Amino acid sequence: EIRELIKLKLVEKNVPSITVAVAKNGAIVWEEGFGWADKENRVPADEHTLYSLASITKPITATGLMILKERGKLDLDKPVNDYLGEAKLKAWVGDQKDATVRRVANHSSGLPLHCQFFYEDEPYSPPPFEETLRRYGNLVAAPGERYRYCNLGYGILDYVISRITGKSYPEFIREEVFLPLGMTNAYVNIGEEHEGRHAIRYGVDGKPIPFYDFDHRGASAVYSSAHELIRFSIFHLKNHHHDQKPILSDENIDEMQHPTMKINGNTGYGIGWEISKQVGYKIVGHDGAMGGVATQLALVPSENLAVVVLCNSR
Image 1 (cartoon, rainbow, N blue to C red):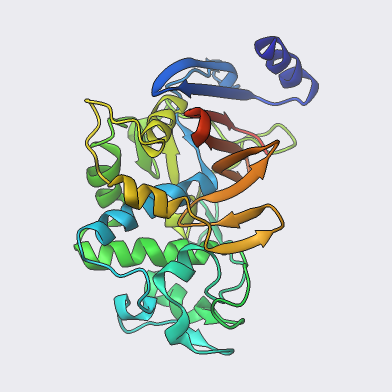
Image 2: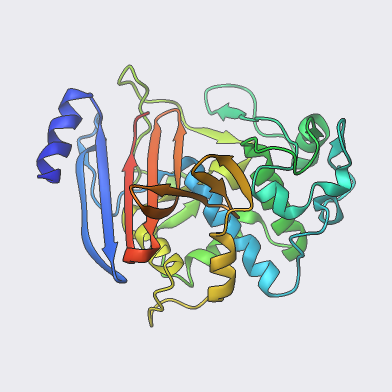
């Protein structure tokens, strides 16, 4: 029934493709692609097609952050400025010392909304991150006072990861998160070598959107297939697979999934995860939405169930 509904909706909504993956009790029970990853070249979508994940990047960045916490390299409750270089957050309201790593991770640091895209057909590229921090690292609410979703916060966390480890953020995430979890077909950003393997991002007019980058890669820049992302989900449901290295303890996985900032009545934010109550179940997840992207990842811990849905149109 669901398969038929997907096929119907692709036509009704003029959506290029949708790919789904479902895991139950640590096993993948369904993964399938529908429609076109690349309409112009007639490349069909399947479970191994690379999709732009948008904000599902955040729980991946948060996983890297928690690896450093587990290794004693980072304290979540210290000011994030302790881990930055010369360019630091500046408080216009409250005290920047209260903008802890945890508050940056749960969107309560006081940073405002931030989205900045750099398209390949424009003459601008992302500046050094220190420049982004100098321009936009302004706290406009007292840290801890309120939830305000901010991509820049996760750009700051990817910068912290690279400063602590001496590795680039893409390199660290690939070596310490993707490869140990068997996610060989997942990357921070993609290049020419992935040509023909990724889903083209399409606008609402049905036309391809020029490739774009960010000044907040830790918030938005991961590409993954549904097959790889469901493997990530299996790990975060604490299924200990012999082919996945235990990159985090169960205690740290639980800490990520514990809401420390309230969003609204039934929903809060932990470390990289949104935690909500829906139809009587605790749902741990994240979605992603930007030009040419709509993605959803949902974990239902009580049922040991995970669902991934990836789409290359808004």
